Amino acid sequence: MSTTTSPPSGAPSDVAGAAVPAPAAADVARAVAIALAEDRSADDVTTSATVPRGCVGRAEIVAREAGVVAGLPVADAVFRHALGDVVEIGTLVGDGGRVATGQVLMTVRGDVACLLGAERSALNLLGHLSGIATATAAWVDAVADFGVTVRDTRKTTAGLRALEKYAVRCGGGVNHRLSLGDQALIKENHILAAGSAAGAFEEVRARHPDVPVQVEVQTLDELTGVLRAGATSVMLDNMSFAEMREAVRLTRGRARLEASGRLRLADARRVASTGVDSVAIGELTHSARALDVSMRLVDLAEGLP
Image (cartoon, rainbow, N blue to C red; front, side, top):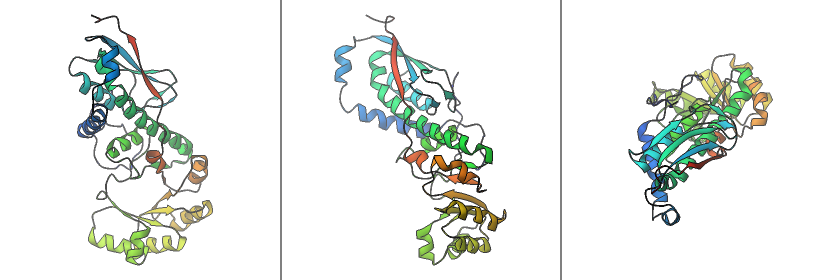
């Protein structure tokens, strides 16, 4: 079974559960080129000494622990870049799929030296993105009973933002803004510069009337002020559970409320039970542990000189 290859919409979504399109080809190509260039700064001295010239084989990419897969199109692109047209790739699960320990994710057949040269780049990207998807899915599962949306942040790895946000979508999460121009997010330093949260909101609305605006507040007084100014999307930064519940009561549905600030998975249900609409989780991208994936050669007979 092959993964989807249609281009992404390019804009952040506020709708969870929709089909996840594959990452844009340009984003994949850029990441693949950088990854392979790092490993190819010199000849592969180990492979050149141990693998007979012209040796052909088949390899399996295997999940060594349970999780949610993301990045199979990226791993596919790594192998195709390294092996050229002489390659056969079979994808046995789709991105966003939950896999068990030992499950084969994809198979690749081609020149063994090229397979080994591409192995680490493919596994690094696949493991990293699958780790993000797995972490996201854990949050999505934790808050599922409350109808709360799990969103990411811009705390991403330089050069990998589009792919990391794709992985969040594979885990069932929803992307926040992709760049500074997608929407306005008024944070503490903007508020300090403008003089007040409500004042900052009014300035942004006046300058960019067609851009969605979210305002970060740290106190209930700030919340009251921005609601009075007309804010319809508010981020509750580092509020206690009691403050979040009071914020929901004060808002009375006039704005979407998003909890943010050092949120922990262990507290996910408690946060969701306050009545907020969404949670913003930076650790999905900046701290997710990579899913353990490996490549093993399973057939070297065919093609041996």
